[in-house]
Image (cartoon, rainbow, N blue to C red; front, side):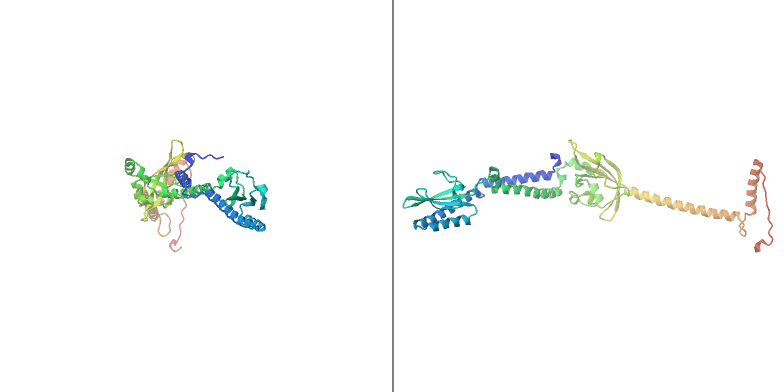
Length: 378
C-alpha cells in the first residue's frame, strides 16, 4: 500500500483538500442550524399527513357501513405509495374492519406504544369518543451505517468533497502558477541576484520560473510578469547536436550540470549563445525542491571565435594559393619553355648534387646524352 507523505503532496493539493473540507463544514453547519431542511423530519410529517388523510376517509366510509369502500381505499393507499407496506382499520375494540397487505407481519408496534417511522397509527374519534384506529406500516429503516450514508447531508458532503478537491486542485494549480513569488523574496536577495552579470533563474520541480534576475530578463527580452509561472522549456532554445535534454531537467543522483551550451532566439530575432550551469535545490529532508540555473552570455565570444575561424580559413586558402603560385614559378624558372626539360642551370645543379652523392657512396653514375636533330619540329 502506497503511503503519501507531506512532501509528495503539492501545495495546491493540500490547499484543495483544506478548502474542500471547509466548504463541507459550512454545508454541515447550515444543516445543523436549520438553514437546510431536515429531510427526515419532512418525511415523517409527510407520513403523518398521509395517515391522517387516510383516517378521515376511512372513518367516513366506515360510519356509512361501506366496508368494501374502506378496503378499496386501503388498497389504493398502499398501491399508490411505494414506501407503504400495509394498512389496517380497527374499531375501538381492536377488531380489524379492513386491511390490505401482510399487516400482521409488518406491524411490530406494541399496543399503547408511540408511533415510529416504520409503524404509524392515527386514532379516529367521533362525538368525542374514540371510534377506531388507522394503522400504516412503512418500509423499515436501513442499518445505522446505511442510514448515515443515506442521509442527504452526508451524501451531498461526500459528493462536494470529491468534486471540490478536483476543482480546487485545478483552480489552485492555475492560480499559484501566476502568483508573483518574488514578492516573498527579501529585497536584499533580489538585489544580490540582480548584481550578477549572468542570468539567474530559480525553477520549481515542473521547470516553471519562480524567480529571475534582470540579466536573464534582458537576455530573453521579456518582463518579469511574462516569465514568472511560465515554463522555461517554452522559450525557443536550440540545443547542441549531442544534447538530449535541457541542463535543468532532473537527472538521477541530483548532480549539478555545468558548461552546457544553449542558443536562444530572442523576440528581436537575435541569436544568443549561453553557457549554462544548473544545480538542484535540495531541502533539509533531502527532497528536491527545484533548480537554480545560471546563463553566461558568450555570444560575443562565439562571434569572435567565428570571425577568427573565418580568418584562419582565409589565411589557409591564401597560403595554399601562394604555395601553388610558387610551384608554378619554380617550374617556369627550372624548365625549358619549349621542351619542358630542365634548363642548363638546373641540370648542372642537379648533376652536381648527384655527383657528390655518387662519390660519397662509391656508386657508379651514368649520364646519357640524346642529340635530337630538328627537335623543334618534333
